[in-house]
Length: 571
Image 1 (cartoon, rainbow, N blue to C red):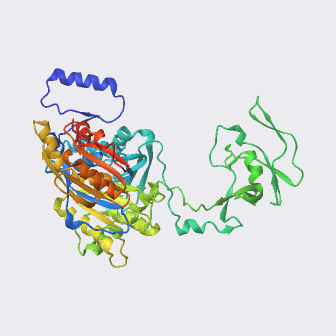
Image 2 (tube, helix red, strand yellow):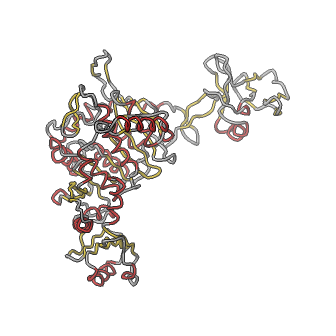
């Protein structure tokens, strides 16, 4: 929880704030909120988008358009809260790690290790952006944030506060630096972390493809498919006593059976109603250390699965024991919490790959392409061919590259949204050129045709006369509305109205009600679902004027919809 900068507060006010804080906050983060210029700017100016037309790349065969937004990600996220609230399937974020090495700027100054407010500044910075990002996720959406040891503890607590501890899906350790990096502690640092959180408990992680070593484990096969033999005894205990029962196993490994049993409610166990014959031994779910475990399945499941899924084999103590067939599922396997693959190396599959694409080193520490791909797969993007992915610390554009590779692999039309500032020319000299290179193809990789739009954030002045602000905002909101509806093809454009469309919908923006009849005629001629935005100084959408429109439509006032979102963010 943040507390306000107390420099200008008197002593009694500070004491009261601490008292209130103590009464309602029992566990979690407390830090001094540090004002941030890009946030304070929004008190006097409102962010909008402006398209850069000469960076548009069009592929006529699909409406799916990916987006690059150049500007501070706080402003970009604010705009997206109007255009895409609750729309993203996954968010990937690689924020500054706050190492103190002067690689992160806050309020136009580098934050170094001697800054007494280094952690407070970082928490203030991250909290504002993560809250904006959370509202962009679908209920089943997943966000993953990478970090290293400098802020892993604080980030986990912050994510718990914003997304909820119950929605923490897992923390993965990724070996991204096999060579190791020396540290003052004497350890060779070779890893970073990826924190996975769901928007709600509806979020479910995806399975990763099996490696060749994992596939090679399934050496046997039957009419159903490949499998490996696994001991039927579970490696854990359970409170369910009905999962603990005796099995009679043939000493020659030829068969096994469930003997006659009777459940004893009083003792919460099975009574054995018969004894094994001389060819059988009694097997119980007890491990080699004598610890009581359970069987994998209930008696009912054993009886139905015995013929095709079970058998008897010698265990490591050379005793006849029951085994079951662990089958290789086509959907892959649940990911481990430690990722250690050679292609997760940030040097070979990050720095060197980017250098080969752009011809020189223009960006420090890009992510491994394969690590990001697997991160998105675990975020369930692989199973959603029409999903949307956001990266609001886009940097070199690895996330966009990863999304395009997934599309190429299975013919999907996933969209990526990349937000980055242009510090040191990153957006113009790294992010955009990399994405364009992937689209056009580069050495060793075929072209991946993708629609792309490039926007920059800009601002309008907040006027003391609210109607003046509304009029200025309507003049500058066209790109935001087109982005919201994903309709970029301009059909009609004059001073009184504009119409854009894609293959299935049209977006009409009416500035002057005197032109409503011609406006409706144009929409009827197009003949698809119409998203109609009507300029109004209030929230009036002039329903009666559109009652006779002979096509399906949805009415929305502008700029009230935009202002409503901004009031909540910038209040």
